[in-house]
Image (cartoon, rainbow over all chains, first blue to last red; front, side, top):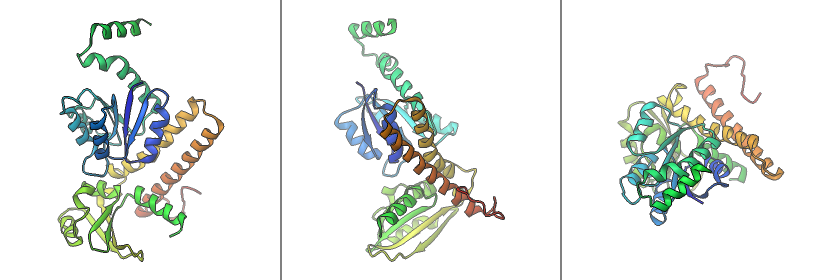
Length: 144
Length: 162
């Protein structure tokens, strides 16, 4: 199962995401960006569900940038989940390298589906590091 | 402080649209709430540990901020500041909208999960309790906004829970 790190300072939002994603993914949680970065460095997850506005020395944008600027961490799929719904906020996330942007309130089932799609097929292709056996497996998945 | 009062304070600290800053007995900033970060765009790490005088100087230059200092009876605290950004009480502005979206997210999300997933009865009951708590949080936030503006419903004394 793919591993996802949920980063949100709101306990109740982490709880919601845990309920929504627990059957499809192995989940870890962090209440702030600093804790999350330490966890990522220790063991990089496959994806990050990352709140933007958090107290502490780093917000979600800064953590996203830090990950995407590190070649060994850049393949981590980053979903920003935020209350910032302005177009410029989403553009900022895109520029910093976020792979997707969900605005609160959002459908947890849509987020689950998005992560399933992104982690099972699309994102692996984007990493450009697939072996022939990886391609054959993906092809078999698509045909199934 | 009783357990209930402590829980109420924790919720007020976490969800208050006003910024709150605690000064310890040594006269240094020891904690700030998420509302402070939203009001000022200053992170907790930037102010925690600095002297109260330096904290005042840092905020004095910021346009549109109002500070109120109170001295609680709590022995471990010298003071608590309430920081009010003029924008925070503008219902069309981003900070209050963001504050309301937090409980709305959990209400929307848990209702969707309850509607679509087959949980056992105990889990359903737990999720419904969470929903009730979040509805109350949202109701309190909205009432605070209505009270602070004293625009809507002020003649009827209407409250959201009534």
